Length: 567
Image (tube, rainbow, N blue to C red):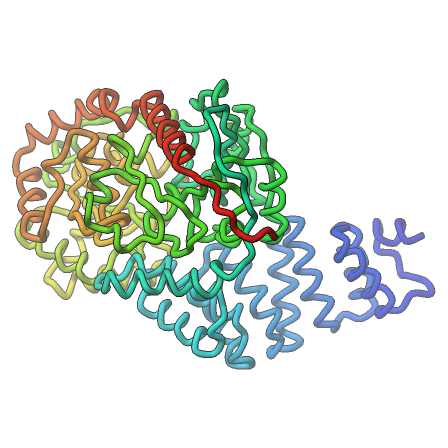
């Protein structure tokens, strides 16, 4: 009878709305989402003004990826009860994650906080929504308020570490202390697995932990590693902390390595799985970025643990043994004091870029048909701080016919804010073009409309720099101290373009002007860029993976076994 009721929403006999709501909740708790949705709808047919049922229906519809239905359910719950904090947060998360409407999401989080100022999830999510719109200082202030209310909020402190990478000005030693404070509070006190002393050379089992084994900026760097590992000497296990599965995920899975989903596990469970898999070297590809699992690494489930790729800064915890870098991204002596890990430098580059198969061919410089140079940036808006916009404004003043194109802006309000900042510097609106996030094909096509890429600072571009080069664009960067501030620098040096790396703002302007004023040289550089990259360490996947495996062997030989207390 229930099955027929669920299928056709027949009027239930002998079941009250409360009975159906309880049945729906039980189904939801055991993950029977279709049954839960049917029962919620039957309950609402009897009691249309049941706000909790509308909210819970929205949660179940999200699990089934019916996002339009979920949004309608959350909105109905709030129509019935505007002070419904859970529904405000749920709707905000949905708008943020699936519709990328960060402005509307922030409004719902603020409404939730107006009713419940102690709602930590709403405050943390508000910070993320602000960051996605480039309001970095406001986002960090929001997190500091969260930490004043709840000093033990590990997630708020972790978000703050990540977002601080985008601050225009920062005290590096204080920044390191913030990372160590996170480690001392939330990682170092956890019990760690004991490991027998490492002995002898043998086949090593490598585990990669990431939330980004999918269509993501880091995928162009991860796939060539997984594709080229020496399977005679290295056994590879991928631990994916994402429920998303797309074409890139499937391409990685087809490489044949063992695959573990850990998104539904807590840190202790995931660490137990790693330990049971007898992983020798566990590599963190996410760090303090969204979806990272530092709580897994804090438990030391593998005898050697390495931070790499996703977070080019210290993790701040004693259980992480190394961070992989190179001598350009982390010049010797520049940042050792700012790491709780040992720096393990690869001999050439820390990146191995896999060009996309669907990128269009390089075209002639757009300036040849436009009659003016077009500068461009396709980096996250959080990297476009006031100092960056001021320097770009100065460049446009020095080159009065040049244009600027900015991509990946989350909404029109953010675009207006950036245009207004440049207009205050005397840059006419017709010289600027702002674009939203684009679909993949449009993204590559739009790169072809730019002559010269401008890199932001101090949070410089990694994947975006490689993408720009692949489309023939020279990238002008300002190198900072270490890690995130030197990602584009190491890309350019390894591409044989060290002359595009500036050490100060005036040199940055000079490099950009020189490129813009010599169109024949720009065209020559553009047409030969892919051949240049093909000869560079950036695209030498075989050589890169051999160097990476050599670093793993070096770390393995140095591991004594820590004798830490067992879990």
